[in-house]
Image (cartoon, rainbow, N blue to C red; front, side, top):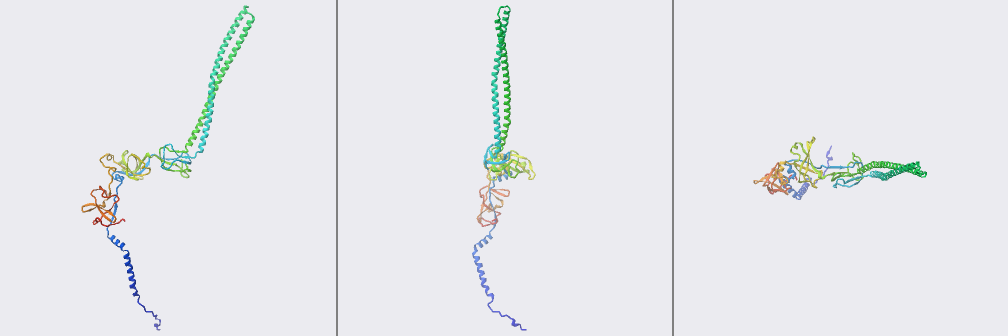
Length: 471
């Protein structure tokens, strides 16, 4: 079989290799253009690649609290109030008025809040009305008793008059009897007539009648005195009874007033409201355990009782004593020192934290000291505190500090390299003091916030450019 007939004829053209040099020049031109366009960043990159990499740190001035803590026993804590109260009502009720807000100063007895008290007011008015009725009845009984007492003297006077009449009538009766007997003797001797005898008998009968009448008047007068005295006694009993009735009614008034007073929440001492726990319309209850009622209306603090509370490790409790001096530094004002003294050391330790609570009393308080502020207390050695020649944290301001690794030596002088922009400047330190792993400067060779180079390379010189590793 002849396979030559199956051969495919292809057209002849220029080889593909001839087009490659053109595209190669295009790529090279693009690369060259890119290098020219980014020449500045590339140059900076290669320059910075050759710069020494350094670490920097800011020079700082330690706070007075840190300076004091470095030489004494110290502990952190908070400002607390020794006198603090969560004010609540004695009875459950709905708040209808709030008279305080956070920061308001109140005096003992001021009304902080008022609960609804319509029912208590009604009971009080009813009890007061009962007292008024009882007092009116008592006044009427007292007036009747007084009137009866005033009538007794006249009744006793009538008895005396009746007794005097009885004496007079008895005398007249004796006289009439004596005259009758005389006339009877004369008549027996026939020295008198019958008419005279009859007249004497009539006079005797009249005297006897007068005597009986006088005796009856005396008996009546005495009976009136007895009845008057009995009326006075009965009136006095009624007066005592009405007076006794006032007592339970007055007790009801006192009870109603006490119930009404319980609807007023009053400040128990002078202080400042630091927290308002409820609003008008809410229900408060002294036995609140959650739910829809509040337990307290407001929280009151006596700012004159503020003190420092710290937890001191129990292994260092032997370094302090009650009454010992201390310095207090508020976290909000670390440069200001407050002096104080140890007021109380708790008689027991905290087993979980291995600490003992200590309370420190402020020697002086101002408006900047507020409850719950953070603080640090430095407990001082009494002997050192009494040495007037020993400089203290208050008399000697803390110096600028830098890490000891920043020190370098050039031409026999000690100094540091300070970063300014991307270059370093050499600063000679004439006087300094090592404090642990830091150096405290005795002169103002550096300012607070200056960035110094840590562990500078041995060939680093003033004015050299550097690259900060931590940037």
